[in-house]
Image (cartoon, rainbow, N blue to C red; front, side, top):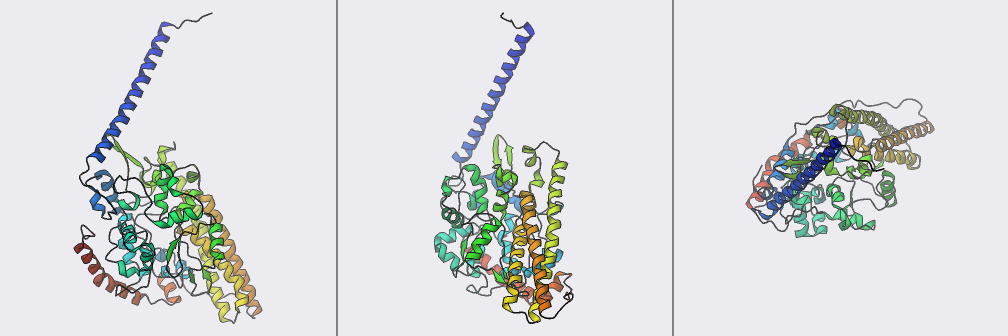
Length: 494
């Protein structure tokens, strides 16, 4: 039997249909308006930009919204429970790290990273790059500039990639002057995302992958992966290389390094052959739940803003905790407080394991030194040093990655706990070596309770280091900036 709608039901369906039509109309209008405004941006450019334009200010007139938010990377006011945008002296906070990096430049100076605006300034002033008084002096290769400036692709185009890597760091001080910005990630003509450094493309090719086939969403992480990755300087030419040939896990990269017998430095205290992890942010992020579900770096670190009908990415790249309403709450439905505390809880648990590992590793290095002094042989010490190398690689891989305790907390806990296990095994084996040498008891431990005491213990003359750097900053750097300004490589000396 046919059932007729009641009068009020008919009117209800009519009103509902009208609301749906109205909503779709508004949505279509919004899309058209956005496209019109975006088109007007690209069709009414005030400046035509072609080639490699490394001066960020040159993009300001065409893309004012993006540029204005990029300028905010100079803002260092954000502070969360465990991190901030400020340059904090980590060695002062955790002096055990001085011991772990004995014999390597990081034992002199290591501060937390600031925003992209400070990339050139911070790598220039750090004690790790030394203080070259002449342009052809070291101590670091030009490869150290690779991720600091859009001037790098310009110089690679001019010198050739090999030619760039073969230069000394000080030789390009007047060329690498603009901080990380527009041309690092965008094609100047149309602002499409692009890969501006060869190392990532080369790593993909060695894996049999074509990076040009990446989707736009994948590119919103891959432009970051040009720099936020583990890498090493290969061969005498210091060729920037990603150790991804066997895969992206810690064990994959460790196997790669072991097979080619690569070592970043020999530890000044224990004599262990050490691998120095850089910042495997991309690799670890891919192992976490967000990476596995296709969330890009930009989704969380460059959330969208809608302004005047235009939707664009916020280029004030910083912690997602600074903008939870536009980052986490896009997908999650909990309160800001709940989400923030969830992050802090994960960080606290990871940091607890990190601190235990740092303490045990520092003791392992010092005890190995004691064994050498007691007359241990190379054969006796090799198993100890192998375990120290493995433990430190796991510590550094977990610690050096920015945001690792949030990106993939389970994986980082696994890595650090395996490192702790190996550090304890190294100490146990060292105890057995000492017993064979006739020593039974506790190895005397030096006072390394402060950065200064730890640096003195490993033989650093920090007064001389800081004096040389101070002279360099006052005499050489101003000459670099003056020359860059005269040659038009920077628009304004900051």
